[in-house]
Image (cartoon, rainbow, N blue to C red; front, side, top):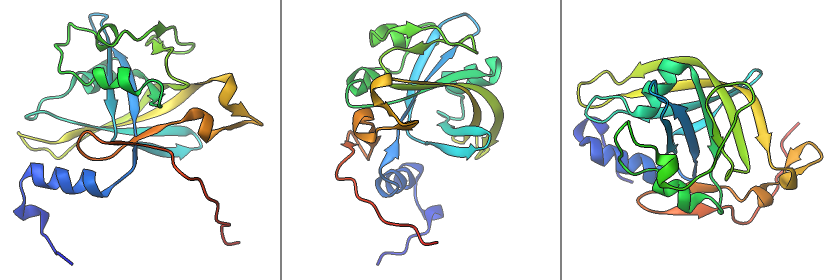
Length: 202
């Protein structure tokens, strides 16, 4: 087995090892409002659950050359955002939102996604997602602290769930109906494959 010190690697090499190893990764499509009222949308696969009581999720938003991305800046300024689950039906449109646009341009318009009003926050979501979560900012932490890298680690509290009725069964979400997709490395994604069950020890 190879044994490699990450300090001896470039940022790109560490990135490749991480995204090739930690798979599959769920994808959050995040909408935010800029201070000028532009609806921004971007996908992130550094995304997971933090807590269920209260319900909280996390996003790690990498900086470019030490500069905050629009999503991180908008969340920190407005304290609100919407997280959508990426699925087989919307992944093509969501992929278009990864384009590098200026802050004055809306990825939602570029991808022809349909804004929909939120219940508890001012940031709209998009109709094309089977699940979306309205979130308020709980914490934001600057990590990495270098001039060329680093990230904004965002923890959001879910204040409202929206779930498509056709995937909601007995107060649970049907994973096959959701058909969530996950991120691998490069341009590769994965669908939910064979589902199996193992009893947990008592």
